[in-house]
Image (cartoon, rainbow, N blue to C red; front, side, top):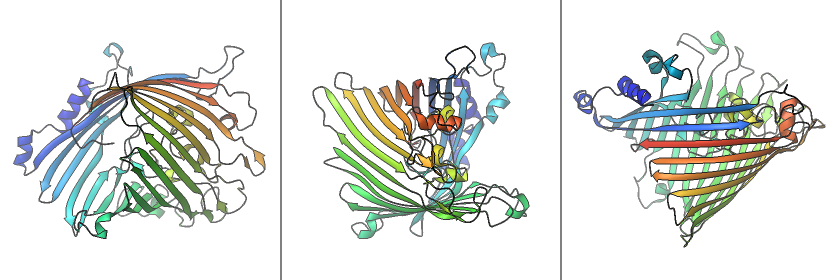
Length: 483
């Protein structure tokens, strides 16, 4: 790990602060993080395999991955600042390193670092702050709009090239405009043209453009109202008739009362737009919707410690009838091939990349509604967190998830309702504000819908318990690294 960090420092940040100042750049500061995630799991793919003999698949995995992020922030010129972030992700422990026989070369190590941030921010441009370049967007934990570092087992990272415009805050203190925060983002998630001499007709598929127009209103005590329209457009072939145009309208509120002793979240999301590509004989109209609800309670300190309780409910609609031109299943932008969710429904269902064959089934609505006219997702979650008074740096968290489809039949075929019930237990230790550790275990009692999704039949023969053990550590430094 020391080698990785040293090479990154040499490759990206080799010049001293005084050297950067000689180039006219000032106020240099650095930040970053080192994360390690180890996982051991059974039955994620075959849900139990063949128990009667030794001929069944060996459905076990055990891996440890690391993620390194290093960022540099600098003042470029008057009212202009910049950021560069490089990340190494993922690196698997034990990968061709035993006795150094296949250890990474210096050149190979340099090639493993990728630029995830490379942008400038122009301040107070016509009353706005403008960020231009490769960046992270959205909010951590958002169900449909977060592009950045993920918390799945692979420790994935996404970024996007674009421009973010925020209305400058604090320009008219005490007026109604000081309570309205407007944001506009538009960017390119995927580009197929390699030169400006080409059009979509030259290269066919590959273009994905994402935009978000959002208003956050501080109009309720201790909370906010949020409304937005998100737009995704994908070019699918040399023709214009099969382009994919997915839209998401959102309206919600969140906040807290009694000094956040009680917190709440309520949001409604609605799809609209059209698609006329593969799998759609004519213009398919997006009509799905989703509801996201949550309430929490945070106790005051007691002689035995502090408690937090929460209950969450999320439902994304499904489509019972695939013979018409209405897609009533709710979609996020995974249907365009871009993962923009940062919500994880369970350690196994929400974070296991092996269970979903790539993106976890329960990361947002990606795994269950990524295709057209899906069957939806319904999640009920209860949880408790305890911080003991006798060990103030430690905490324990227990989560229960009830996971199912929104619809159990499609075109009069029974496909199963329940994915299963999951229990997660996590023990944590916060050594400092910047150094933390956690270990835990999870158990998913799989059910008929999960088995059907794997076999394509409702046979109910392989619904064994999926188990997982995990351990994680994170060290961070500096002030910029947030996600």
